[in-house]
Amino acid sequence: MNKEGETRKEEADLVIGADGPSSTIRSILLTKVQREYAGYVAWRGTVLESAASESLKETFLDHFTFFHDHTRGIQILA
Image 1 (cartoon, helix red, strand yellow):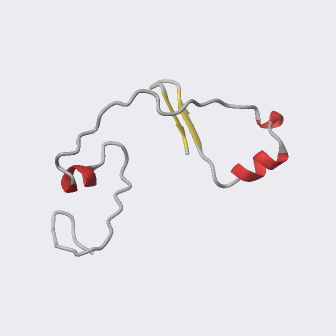
Image 2: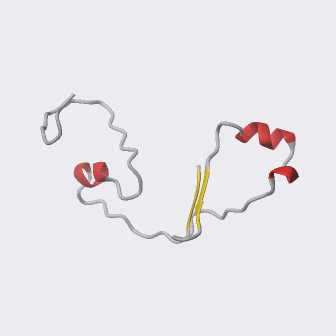
């Protein structure tokens, strides 16, 4: 484990950078790739849990997260 501020070189066959839409990893490895706004890429909706079928609830139990911040206008479904 490196201490903060130290660097080292690594060799890999595959690198996964799961650090979000403003990815630092992408900007380092793919310098010519720029993030562009794509508009809506998904429509979303919600349903009351009481209105969902048992099958639907079992499917998403422990596999789904929902975050909503009214103050910043953010909704994340994962």
